[in-house]
Image 1 (cartoon, rainbow, N blue to C red):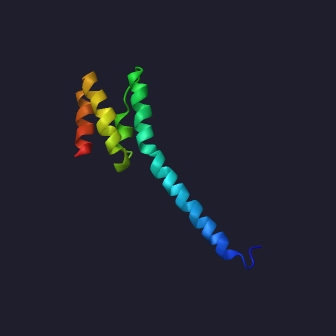
Image 2: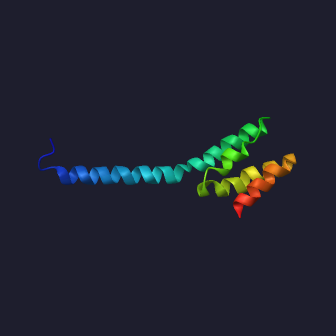
Image 3: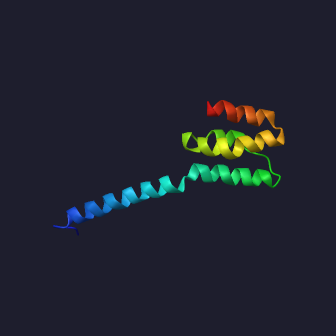
Length: 88
């Protein structure tokens, strides 16, 4: 099927893979998950701290700027302490 055309196919595959990695880096899915969870918590639902802390290192900036202030403002010391411990 690709006789004699394997080089352009390989190049196209490589470019597509790099484009996917770049798109995920720009989209920052961990930050979006934190933002969605915080928005739900602002509408009255519970902040799912256990889930947020399992997101990994990519979520740390969003946890520091969105989740920690929300937990502190609500007076939820257990959530605020858990998030602060994870940020160390």
